[in-house]
Amino acid sequence: MQVRLLGPVELRDGERGAVPVGPRARAVLAALALEAGRPVSVERLIGAVWPDRPPATSTTQIHGCVSALRRALGPARDLLVTRPPGYLLRLEAEAVDALGFGARVREARAAERAGDAERASRLLREALGGWEGPALSGVPGLYAEAALLEEQRLLALEERIRVDLARGAAAELVPELTRLCAGHPLRERFHAQLMVALARSGRRPEALEVYGRARRVLVAELGVEPGPELSRTHLNVLTGPGAAETTLPHDPADFTGREPELARVSAALAAPGGALPIVAVSGRPGAGATALAVRAAHRMRARFPDGRLYVDLHFTADPVEVLGRLLRMLGVAELPVGRAERAELYRARTHGRRLLIVLDGAGGERQVLPLLPGGDGPAVLVTGRTRLSALPGAVHVELDPLPRGDALLLLARIAGAERVAAEPGAAARIVDLCDRLPLAVRAAAARLAGKPHWRLADFVRRLSDEDARLGELAHGDLDVRPGLAATHARLSAPARRAFARLADGSFDREGRARQENPENPSYLESRENRESRDALEELVDARLLEAVPGPSGHVGFRPPGLVRCFAREFARELTSRPEVGNATEEWG
Image (cartoon, rainbow, N blue to C red; front, side, top):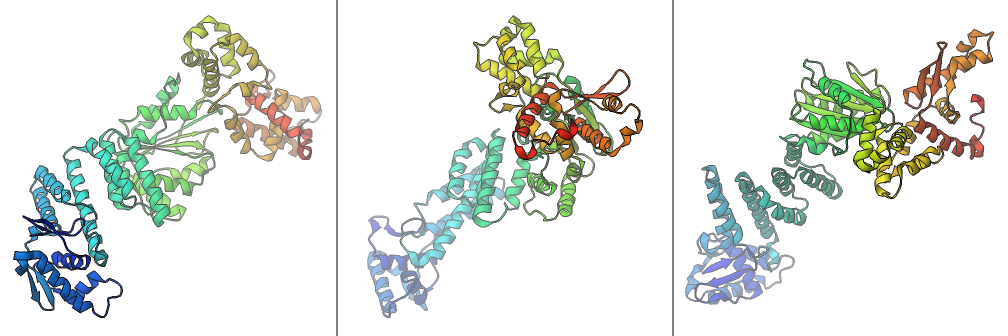
């Protein structure tokens, strides 16, 4: 005789097959089979049949169920005996599938300890193959026992997957683990195993997406961060061999030029010595500081085998929040609350590790300083609009417009080499109207690629209209305006007022002052002039003005072409608003 509990509860006879048993007798059979070889009290049997409110005749009915089971057992009725305080079912463990399941799992564990992973995997598969559905189906009074059996099944399944991963079957496990994660979204080990399987199959970005989904579910459903195992797996995927590139943005295939700047960045980041290497890349909006940093980080994979971590600071991101993001990348599940505590833990986690931290879009030194890693090993690559001169020991790399040859090469790569070769003069004029900025040249080239019937000369005429130029240089995600607008938004009020005058074309600080006050050289030190001078210097720092030495030693100021176009749009908007329409008069 055999009793099946791993699915619908059944009594089976080797000759007769499944033996019909009533629902109450089936509950008694299940309770007895779970404890095969040991007595089960009548009280426990009553609970198996009536989990909530047993009737007054429950004891009598249990005796009736036992009698029905003995009739069902037929010649094997002696297997069910009376044994105070209840009854005992004399069956060997192999005759009860749930007990046999446990025995095979223990045998598989012993095989794995002995180094026989193949046998361990086979035994676990056999054990799991005996399940025919949810355990103890149809017996609600044994809910706790059913939940325990289901947990044992899941543990055995996790063990079998772990053994198979160790045997090198990563790719084959991905579909199964994907289904398991969908069916058990709160079971962290399945998510961790799927991450491992994906990473070992060369699918690291997907592995990191698994972690992100799992974390969102855990936070939303339980209000907790991932536990140690899933966090460690996340860190291993991030920083394991070949993993670091998955934390970086895509390396643009059309990246052009900047070889001298790349060489400086790479040399500075790889410089020997105990001090933390810091490289700060700065340039005008659209100069390609982010693209250059990403290209450099991709190139330096071998130099930083422990990982390359990228965060976008958006110029104003709170360092406390950014430290949390970095710590989660480093596998920290429980984040400290305070800034000092997070910074201390961050420095401890990065100490001695060959990590490259890419901090993109820094708004200033105060934002960056708390994000510097600790100890020997890491390096930092920062990008920003302004020169971060207060960063200790930083090597500064400033991005000028592209040389015309590189700008034309970039235009040709996207818009088509034949079109550029056919109209070389117009092509040169296009890149000049783009201020030879990579972002603007990409946008112009993308417009041309989407308009194969346009002549380059026709596009030059469109770009020559300063009131329409920025609109012509907007194509999908390629748009010069957002970077200029973000830079303008961080200006002080005096600098914004000065910015409104950029549409005039130029500034000449000292020459203008002398013309207006030839007999009063102290004018340059007056409060009014200091404010104007400070505002202009702020615009220079923000890369919205260029300082141009004049013939008589004074300094003039000139906005680049695209900045002047943006200033014209800004001035039109400003003067259309009555409450601020006269804001620029004091600069007249």
